[in-house]
Amino acid sequence: MLFRSDPASAPCGSRVLAGGVELLAIPSVFVVILPTADRCAEEQVLAQLPRSERIRIASFERSVDRIRSGVGRLVAAAAVSDLLDVDLSSVAFNVVDRFSKPLCNYPATASIAHSGNVVMAAASRGVVGVDVEQLIGVTLGARRVLSSLELAWMDQKDERDQPQAFLRLWTAKEALLKALGIGLRLDPRLVDLSKGLPGPSEEESNTRWHISVPQWGMQCMSMRLDLDEAAYLVAIATSSENYWNIRQLSLDDFLRRFAWRTGQ
Ligand SMILES: CC(C)(COP(=O)(O)OP(=O)(O)OC[C@H]1O[C@@H](n2cnc3c(N)ncnc32)[C@H](O)[C@@H]1OP(=O)(O)O)[C@@H](O)C(=O)NCCC(=O)NCCS
Image 1 (tube, rainbow, N blue to C red):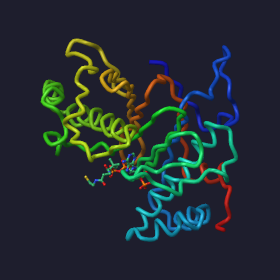
Image 2: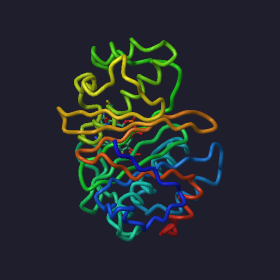
Image 3: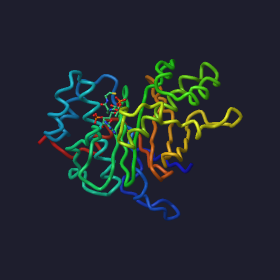
Image 4: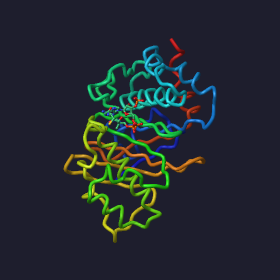
């Protein structure tokens, strides 16, 4: 799997890699880390959102949900802007399709996910889906969402490795379901990823994984993100590309770099 992880300091406008590879066709992915406790965060985020978005998130009871969802749309807009090289303030997500997938006003697809202190979004000219989940030490719910072959693969792992193995599958699966735009309306057990998983004797990385899903014409990449307060697994599913441009930055850095509205 070809993979590119850009440090946050990489110039956002750089479009060509050494060797002349065009970046325009590569899905743009942003991972933004929220502050653990910051009472100003919601005001900062609200100030950047258009009125329609402020109204949308106002219905969420908890501040943390308003922040996550609001930041998700900002991050998705930044990903579209970066992908297409269009003005950030012109990107809007004012509609969702009948399965609740947010649609943007440009010829690109975008996907959003949030969990704990992590918000991520990706934009692509093709099909794209993302997911992020906090790694907790249990495999609760695995039997409701994994196919029997996936469960067998998870069960042959050491007990202490099973929560991570479960989330590798679950994040990839959810990213795939989001890329397809169906979400959890489809029983996730019917999306079987076991064919693309490594066998017991195959060596694997402990932090980054690739699952090919030929029956759906998709590729999934997931990786582990170790933050101070917790570990997360993030996953990206795309239709054809096997190369991603990922940037990770703090909410402060993100807002500084992508401050484009003043709360109109
Ligand atoms: C999409 C779905 C899988 C998200 O799961 P989740 O773990 O709760 O939340 P995540 O953080 O991973 O993702 C949430 C984001 O997914 C996006 N999303 C929602 N529906 C989507 C869909 N059908 N396809 C792609 N993306 C979708 C949204 O951007 C949402 O964030 P936002 O509302 O703040 O913009 C799930 O909510 C779903 O399937 N929804 C549609 C079906 C439904 O409503 N079922 C009822 C419960 S079974």
